[in-house]
Image (cartoon, rainbow, N blue to C red; front, top):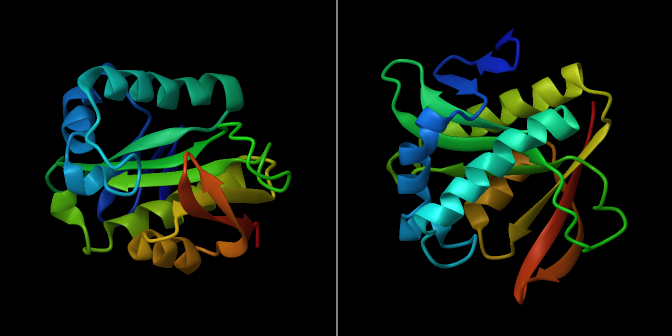
Length: 176
């Protein structure tokens, strides 16, 4: 993994902070029913995606970490987003106040290992570039692919919860 300022490069991916020019690709991904299946269950509107993109960029300025836009190194094609936020969900005391990992990938690249590559790079960056020794994530209890991805990147179950009437799993990862 190569780190350039806040940009990361892996064998197949480039991760950069969100920019205005990323909006069309970002909104198209969030409009895909398969992509949003375990997030809200319904495709996002352009307004919702714009607000989310702004939030993702804003995390960087306020928290010193945030979400990256992920693209293929070879083609520049939009892959998805990965990163960390602080969402203050009010779920559990062991969840609040820690960087919350999240990822969302365009349906065209599901099952190709891009998620694992991007999440691994993001976690390595968090470990080396910040003071945080712990991060957390929340995953829909039925999202087997994301649960596997989290486990492969060191996240371990610590409790079940409910968020917006959806059963979720809360997981945490300790800096090695």
